[in-house]
Every structure is written in C-alpha cells, then in structure tokens.
Image 1 (cartoon, one colour):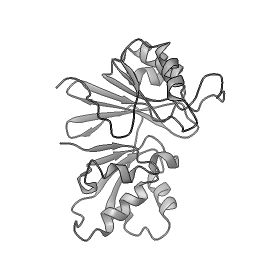
Image 2 (image 1 turned 60 degrees about the vertical axis):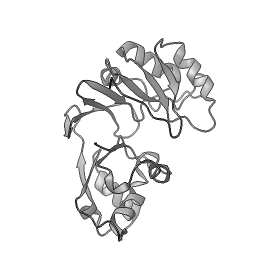
Image 3 (image 1 turned 90 degrees about the vertical axis):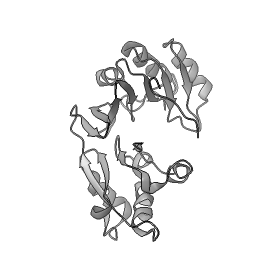
Length: 225
C-alpha cells in the first residue's frame, strides 16, 4: 500500500497519527509553501529524526515548488542539521509526471499569489485531482478533466470575498468540475468563518454530480474497487 500525503499544514500531524504510522508515509506532495500547507513538516522531521524506536532507514521524498528545501530550513531554524538526511526534497516541474510506485503524479501550475500546483494522481486509470490553492484558471480544468474525484478548495464565498487570483468559491469550484467533466466533487479548505451549507449550495448551482464538503476522519474511494 502506498501512503502519500497531499500537503501537511499546521495542525495536520496530530490527526494524521490516528490513521497512519508516521514512519510508514511514503511521500509528501506539497502544492505550495504557505504555512497552512507545509508547516507540520517541521513536526514530522522531529518524529523521524529522534524517535529511538524507529531509526531512519530511508529518506522521505518531499516534492514541492521551487525553494522547498530552503523554506523548510527557514521554518524549522538553523538547528535542522539533519534535514537533508531525513527529507529527500525534489522540486516540481509543471506538466512533468512523477512516478510514485503505481501512482503517476502530474503537477500543473495554478492561480495563486505564490508558485502553486494542482496535483493529478492517476493509478490504473483512477484519477484524483487536487487543486491546492487556486482561483479559476485554464489549468484547473485540465487538472480535473474526467477525474473520478476533484478535491477542490473552496475558501471564498461569492459576494463576500472579492479579491481575485487567490482562492476558489463553491461556485467556481462547481463550474470547474462541470466544465472538466469530473465525476465527483469534494470541497475542502473552508475557513471556520464560512458556512459550509452556503459554499455547498454555490457549488450545487453549477455542478450536478455527486458533491459534498469533506469532514475530519472521513474516507473516500477514488475510482472502482
């Protein structure tokens, strides 16, 4: 079984340990380098470096945008002396697939203030498309084309959040899913001040397929058994 993390933001490491042993993670795929998407790599570094019961047997592949290794050092501090021994940091090249066991991961550059990627994961024809953080853009539709599941951020609410080129709303996520022919739409990355029912209704107005807002601890199947 391949265990891959899509981002590891602040607060994610604790809940993660309820479902997987940290030493069994096979790779971490970072969409971009804002703290809410990568900061708990600092805690993962501690766990992998200092756990006396599980000595390091391999470096953990970490894929991310340009400057990922430097950003990790800045986040942890100058005493991250074993960072290169623990993490094998590699940088995305837009549109160039990466093979992780049976999974092919294709990063596509999306529309956010920093270098950001949506990630398309294909295993045996079953496709999960993950937007990372983005506003509407042509690459978003390419990312989600015929995907079994589109896992889309929906941080903004129409009429309330008007700054362009940062985040999707439920409406814009729904439009992208409909245009791409995605088979299922899951909405995530909703801030605590946003009513999920409002974002869900926005998405439903544009997308007629299976749709829901994801919640902690839920599990979803991509493709067919």
